[in-house]
Length: 462
Image (cartoon, one colour):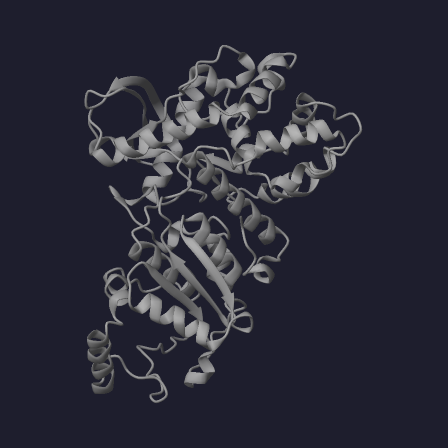
């Protein structure tokens, strides 16, 4: 027989040293802060206040509040038509089930903030002074364009410490909004367990593979890199789609949808105008047996399968279950080109998606391929040109690898050629920011894989 256990309605926190927000002293501090102009950061934060849904979600709840307060667009819907950050969406660096059990390390919170598109500066208290910390507090209190997330020692306030493994005291983040949302077209993901192997391959194995004596030209460089790609490589790098419920949409795009889709198409166009992209296309088209031997980013090999996968992923995003064990089945799909708002044609993938006894219509807007390629080796999705695919994604990922990846190439002329092909300095600004965002993600995920992310909080990520 199970015994009922008494719960806690709420616990009175020791005061002093803390000051109760609703007390007379608390209200007086509030008034003084308004008069002194140090409440500017408060208003947006309180507008997006979120109570953590799990005891160990303190880091996730804090981050989702800050991201929403900074008006950073998650690029995917939370529920219904609303694009909004929620704890359940912050799972790109650590599975939610693990966070629920143990909490999240501060380093992985840094990773989450970067992946979500924020500009992040991370500090240890032993790497900065008390005066530095106070300056940051004043900066964020007198403006609404930055916020601090801090992990502090609860015992100082005579409070019981959380019995969790992570979020050790003595760390703080300065989080602000970048001048443009990064990750317009691509993002890295560690939802699939294979991400550890992929990250290790890209950061550790590739630099060793290019050291071999027979690497004499760019074609051979691509050959040694692509021939050993780990399985499920396509689960590691994803393209970012515009998803909406069919009943939410129409033949016309909103100004936001039209603007984001135009930016995606421009980034895709810039990828395909790089010299590296031309080498990737030439390499893939030269493979014997054509598409069969080309590196692919998925197991789909025909247009209906691709469309069905797109719609199922879209349904998962809309329902907030992306990456969970819940599975969707797409009964029917349709791919068509239409002219929206009298503008240039767009590609619309529509599907009827079933989950148990429920079904819903999903529309996915995808950037059209600006470059018409006739080679089979370009990959199945580029043959139909409906969204970023094999050669586009592989090019972007090669650009995102750290420059030192190629340092081991023995032929000096080839080394200089590779440096020129992967240099970000001369890239158009949209593509440059996209590539640097991927590079930061790759750096952080590699540190996560090595369990060293907390050792390098202050390390530059450029």
